[in-house]
Image 1 (cartoon, one colour):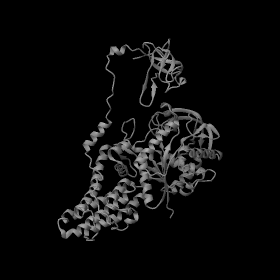
Image 2 (cartoon, one colour):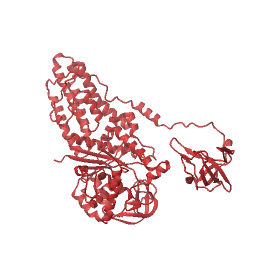
Image 3 (cartoon, helix red, strand yellow):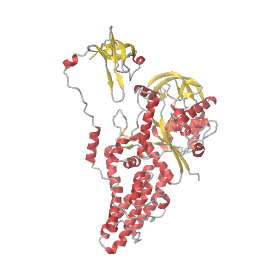
Image 4 (cartoon, helix red, strand yellow):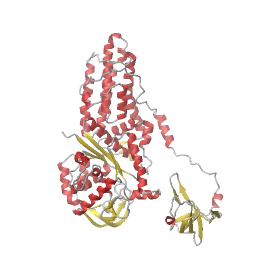
Length: 634
């Protein structure tokens, strides 16, 4: 058996720091690869960031920094989140990595030279956030069919990829490989909706922005996201178009699983495999489109204000609880829900009660009755054997579900074991056995069985809650962490005395925690200057002015000197905005100007008004208007 396994996530777009709905994918991937490692697989796990495109270029311009500075900041923030939540990746690839950009250029050139890519002209509708073109027949109420945002008309020279050349071959592959697209509903969606009719040629270059990998033989074009971002799955392994592939590519390709969100399934099950076919590369074994985490019943969205961030969840509940919730509560093929109320409810029921309380009272009774030294006296009764059976059957059940990527069902198997162990406590009543010296051999057996059941759960929890598993191993003093140690009940050895331990999970007071969270995220009271009357405000004359000329102040680096038409009259205005605007960027702007401000001389240059601007801790922007010069602002 070739026990090699390569798993990738979709690479996160660096337009903003991701919320828990985005990070869920990496947690899910991490649980899968950790489990594979425990099974003895040689695993390679790649994740990373998608860093090119028009949206990034625009956001960087708004922030007054270069695109590279912008993506460096976001990529590092994403990496920090992944590291905090315990994502055990082997490579964090960035599409700005030099090796990636080089190979992307080579791929584009190869596809062009063999006739799969040609130059043409695009005229249509474009969604900047989704970085997608759409035809009139695809749009919904004049908006993007994927995100619902307004579209803009686009017309530009572009290169196109002939997807239809490989369409029949792709359909045949999907039908002949039933596990290629999972879940089943996603496969049917691709076959019945997107592959039913002839595929249109795919636009794979842009000229309207320049933040991206340049087409090597036509550098006014940048290579578009489909070839750039999707190629990371092979560039990260050292693929070479000339066949001089790196050792990682030879060892791990084809990928065992591409783990992606269901919203980008089309790109990964149509564009990507066709690109691989054109390159003569074997297709990945499986593309799994996982569901979303919803906030209640709604998709998380900044505009709706219903986003939950990973850092906030970790702060209030801890890493183990966050990982447990998203892995346990998101079904295999249906969207799951996350609210603070639901997280607290699950935390108390499963982590504090089922797991935490079992460990706490087992350790407490071991200390109370035997000073922390528990022996397997094998004083068995019928009730013991059902516990043995449950423990021994759990690993095969978990493996079955993990092979199907049903991670929530696999984790639920572990907690069924824990609930069976709690029931065993009630059945055996160790506190009653402890009252009689004659029953201490039986009490030893009962407590030993509980410690062994706890060890079973910890071994299995290593993939899902690795920090929690390590804490349990330390509490029960064992290094028996392998799956092999779960084949037969009774492998636990208590060679060192157990010691009093802190609770794994303290029960949360739901009302107090929700009040704490509400207070934390409540709108902050804005500090303002002393109140003024409407008569005071009426004294200020604010008008729209057009900047005709702008230059640097001859004696001050932070000042710009602008000549502003305020409606038939030109004023000279000195502004402290040189750290945020170049002189040429100001020319032509319609700005807001206080025109009745008393003139003042700043470093030898008279200023006859004030250009209004807004600012925060990071940047400053002048307040602009589409009104004609001289218009009053009231």
